[in-house]
Amino acid sequence: MKNQKYTLKQIREWFRQLEENRYRKRYMVDAKRVHHYVNLGEDTDLPASLQRKTGTYSREKALAKQFKKFVREQARLAKEEKAKKVRNEGIISSIRKIVKENISKSNRVSLLKEYEGIEDSVEKQLMNVHIGLGNAMRDILIDLTNQGHGDEAKIPNAKKANQQIQKVRQEFTKLVKLLKPIITSFKP
Image 1 (cartoon, helix red, strand yellow):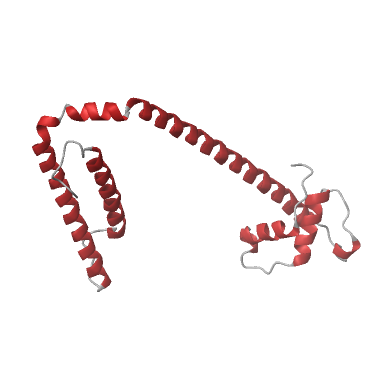
Image 2: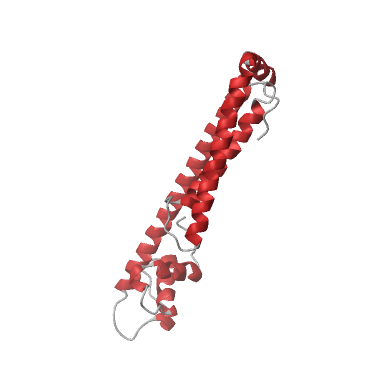
């Protein structure tokens, strides 16, 4: 990272992010001076084409230090994010492996055979859940339609609620597929 050269484009993009430059015109020569100090160090002299008639370049040197600090921070955050992602993937893969070992196809069928006597109550409960999901979706869609016509919202965050119900409906469908060997008449 010490020998890495940064482009003028990277420095100008960083300039745009600075609060002090939000409402100020950014001059290319300022970026070129900071670019020079970032790549060659704060102790070097500027070439004649970048020098001013008078004055010091303390602002540009400070910006060069700030840019280097910004780059280090971005690298650190990227490294942490990558480590977190790798750690999460490892945890997820180990959980999947455990679940696959514990719930094999033969094991699932034997577990379902234990509940063969209660098909009717399971079907009734599934039917109630299915009806409840349908009613909730209907109410949310009616509220969204009324909001579109200028009425007040009866359900806060109706769009989010609709998305959540869609997710629950997908999980419900997965559950029904899992219970298919013991339930024959119920079809969502």
